[in-house]
Length: 113
Length: 116
Image (cartoon, rainbow over the protein chains, first blue to last red):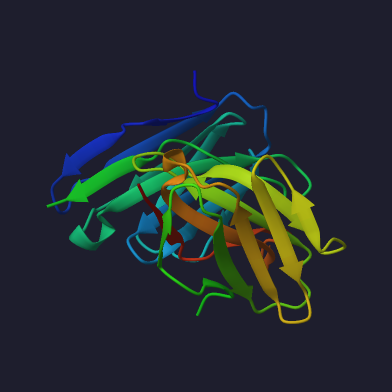
């Protein structure tokens, strides 16, 4: 089983719809992240959470929200999806101590039509 | 722009040759760097890391070199194999603004293509 699990792996949704991407981890890490990947732009940080009560905006948080339901769970929501949010989304985790290795999930392909 | 960048978006090498993937960073205070490999349809996977108190670190078939003078990082892959085909990202430890904590920022990636 993967240490960082994302659901759904693929989703097509319509403009204006609400969509949630879920992430769970079995690594016991405190820190969790949501990244977005677009061709030619690498990985960009959307939100990050260093513990259950800690939520921080990343580089591109507009249009997104997150919820840290438990240490092992971190979900990303698009309240009203738009086509330029079509991308590959990655959840990731790391241990406390900053700058340590970040472990990624397998990714969730989201297409907004 | 991003503080971490790669010199070439695509690198094509012959199977069996050595591959060298380069990365430049802009923050001279950065003290930790990681290389990731991303295969098609998968998430990025950790390859090797290096701290700024080192110039070189070796793993299995991979070597990372750090030149702090010119703020340059490279990943060398020995005897490149078909399974090495992937996109390679360098990442740099950064301080997140407002969060009072640090994390990683990623370059755009280099696509390594292995020619038979």
